[in-house]
Length: 398
Image (cartoon, rainbow, N blue to C red):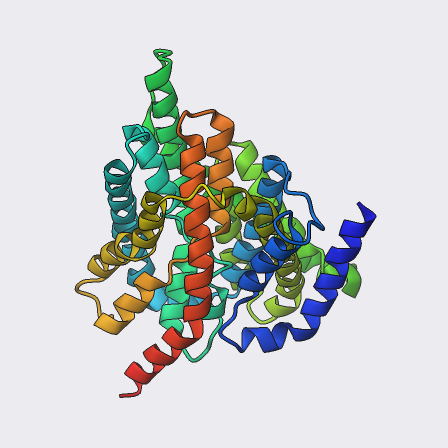
């Protein structure tokens, strides 16, 4: 235990020294973390065992995603978002359903072992994009602000929107195996997830922000404890929404948007601690993913799995997004860029854990496909971030 902790601490320290240099290269942080995890895991050095419990991985992934969603939302330029709201709105309302439908159809074609509902589950899991893996793009100021804001808003909300559909398809799949006679009301589930998530995120953040403002004016908040406010508020929004059967991800993102609006001029000092903690947890999550999860699928991957992963990251994602933006002022290059940068990551990992805990017959196959897709996305989107950014900037400057 202490040896593993020592290794993690030294790795974190060493990476912190070169993080700025890595971010300026074509190699992303998550790529470094995952491949370091593979190196340290049972396949190579065996410094870490590969028997991490699913609940542990989900806990790390959940906490990481929540902190990143809240802090990224707080940093959104609201004026830009309001002026170009049509872009993320179309990507979410038209593009996201299209991605789920195409992913569902592709799963039916390639995987005979999956039922119709399990194919829908796979399509839903891989429709959610990752705000953490897309950070290199949404923080690059060379890219037009409206594109960065659109991607940030889409990745912040689409995983929360996928959650109710995921639970609906899981319930339908279980009902088809062992009928209980309980009617499933999809629209009710969707509205509850979204509505409760928004109410909790906005309500809790509003009350928390009022309390914070009052305590700041009285000088009750110290510089040390000031760093705790945003991480604690983000986790509170997520956990309360989850407890009340709402979407914790929507709660975290909507809460972050409101916090950023209310503390516009001073938000950076509050959000910085959440960003640092989120990056640290992300490093640990990707290390565990490399050491335990990736190591466990080597030798199990088939050509169908690879084909699905490649098509999921390209045609299945890019075509619906491209079509959804027809009629807007987004150029063909803008639409291709927005379609390509839909990396899969932490949200998909969390969804896989949920599916495996449900006990569905096709859960292991679904997990294999998702893990392979996330790993491929990590490499493809990580290495393409800088070249694609330079390509888009060059197109804009013509």
